Length: 365
Image (cartoon, rainbow, N blue to C red; front, side):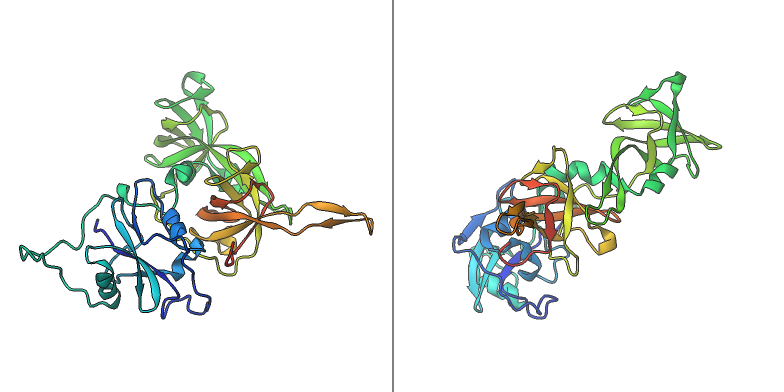
């Protein structure tokens, strides 16, 4: 894979889709003039070093149009803070400093030649995808990319189910076989085994948004006779039980590239659950929100988190009053379903709880 050049530009991009927003993006006063990318950095971390509103990435990225994927940088890359054409620019230093960055931005850059040898200097390098700097902490979300999922109640109930184990066993694990019953199964199909989890209910409308399908195992159908298929378990996180459901495996990249951006025309929502907790979380926690593909939510959409105001008694008028919500952090959606989405908390100024509000962010969040 070719190494791309990533430029972060403070200010609106001429001719970009965001030009209608007249509010400039500000560089932090504490932004470093030089920074070497470290192993373990994320693009969010790096943007947060330079920008007061790191969620406004799409408005500040200016890239070499010849680069196929401009959203990757690598450990060891040296970043420069330059002032070019009245704009503050953070760019990968290719060795020529701010002058070369200016040429690169205006398309005037030419091949660089070593002054001593006269040989052309390399302008790109090959790197495996595994060493690229991710947008967010993949360790925090990896289990949710291909593990548990949210499905409609009807789809879950209609899915093939574990009928029996070999030799009448009622539980099985990796390396073993079970029999499943259902329609449309075919030899060679890859299925995940799931157990019914909690339903997600919209706290404002009462609508059932889906149920959590808990990841149990994965494997494939090796043979089918009528409605009964032989299922070989390749991986299991817990024992496979009678009545567990089989859902066709989803194809999803293990290390996806996210482009954080402000959602357009998505109404405020609520946090339905903080995953792997008793109801509260902080930075890098995964939350479920009651907004999904139906509402136009996409991977990379960034939401401001607000802690719901407490309900207090007005002693003067003897009535209950709800206090205003308080800003609590930021979260980015990394996986979407029909009516809900998974998001990772990128910033938290207080404990994030189930029931807290999510809204499209505004400057200062």
